Image (cartoon, rainbow, N blue to C red; front, side, top):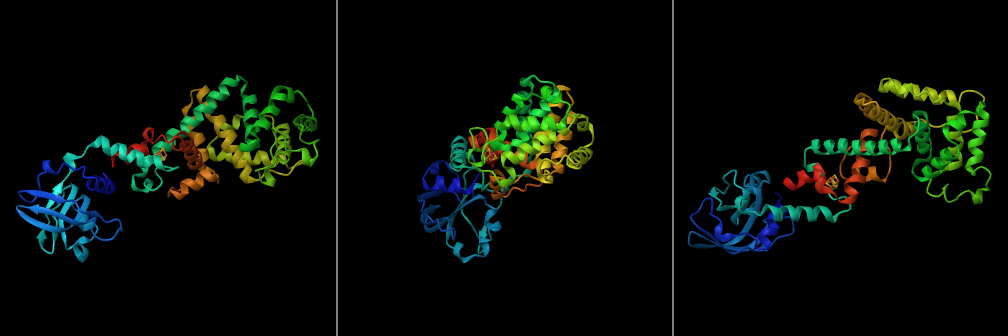
Length: 388
Ligand code: SF4
């Protein structure tokens, strides 16, 4: 229950006054429910009038979810509340005295239409782009954590289904995922099309790494273009940072996949070892004289771990019915720094702490599957907020 809902009921006179038995009087007749004081200071309704056991009283009316909120809000030591003539509460859990006088009180709990309350709360949730933004910190964090795991699992399972439908051998699946990770969100399509033009098996039939590298560059159609022609329907420079330009990422991708033997057994290591081995592998690829491209940074290596290695682990975990592998992919994400993007900014504004890449990936999934579609009623957080 919320105080603002009780205010709405009182203001719109949706309270069945005639049915309510007073707590500490024989009879209370509400003659005028008063004027809503929206200033946030002082009693909730002013200029009210009630008849209590035959005597008319004129003054203020205060509304709370629990009668004990009177003390929690420190009204007992605030003179502005001395002229309260009626205390309206959802639950009467404590007698309330002001200046030694017991406050006349009515309890609404058994007179509230729960369905109306749920509709009101839902309407309130649905108004905002990010509906629960001001309420999230009010509920137990367990509800958000549960939703994070559920949304993350949904995302991983959706990705696994797409990978399974490709019907490719596992090394080709990993090649596809690596390409998609190098493309990030903007140039993903271009990278995936490139892997379709040069499938993994075809690439690896070429014995020279240098030739593999050159073939990928040539087939992309990107390296031959003049800078003016570089932005095409698949390759996008606009909206990306210079370090993320597709020609730079393409050279890095070509170097990575031409040097990598696609032995994926490292995914069976412990999460710390997977991270260590992956960094070592990347460092080794840029160590010798085959330095065709700018070395990929640690933060970009982390993005490959997040967007290629983790979904691959999940996919293999599904294939082999190995839940431990999926659990390990979560542990790996927990070792990596969170991503920074507009979605994470939205969550931070709601007061949500984002500690690592599991948090960012799961919150991104929650946003995509529930929040952005206003599916608060299928979200544990939304359901809890409606119940409060
Ligand atoms: S879907 Fe859940 S987390 Fe998202 S805005 Fe609604 S209540 Fe909040």
